[in-house]
Length: 127
Ligand SMILES: [Zn+2]
Image (cartoon, rainbow, N blue to C red; front, top):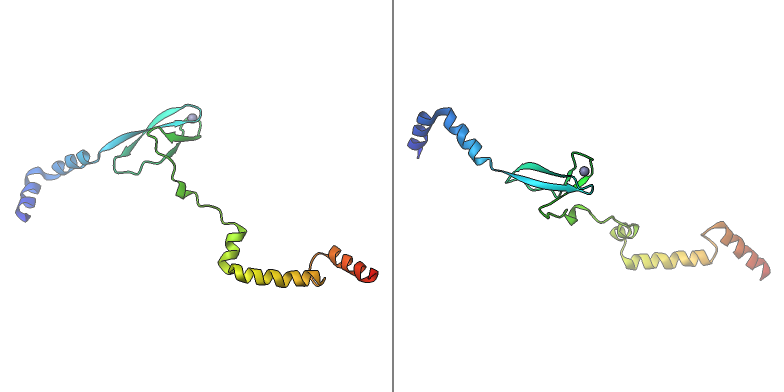
């Protein structure tokens, strides 16, 4: 094995390696079409992951691959809602306890918006 490598290097020299390099860099044309109907092709290595979208060189819009490659859904992470963030910190049981506690305070007029306090004060006065 070592002998063959040495012989090849001696006979072919530098140019032999260059030719091989070009031969192995296989390319492909990937077609895209934007919403305006502009079609264009991008040359890529066959080993490259083909992007589903490419910027249109004529109008700058997103052009979709005509090979039918769809944009990856998982690339768009679902937005975390306030509820999701809350559940990361508290269990639903904890939240129920907190809700009960807060409702009692709210009904007792200890917390909540000022107009509720006033309503409670009126009620107290009336009663
Ligand atoms: Zn375009």
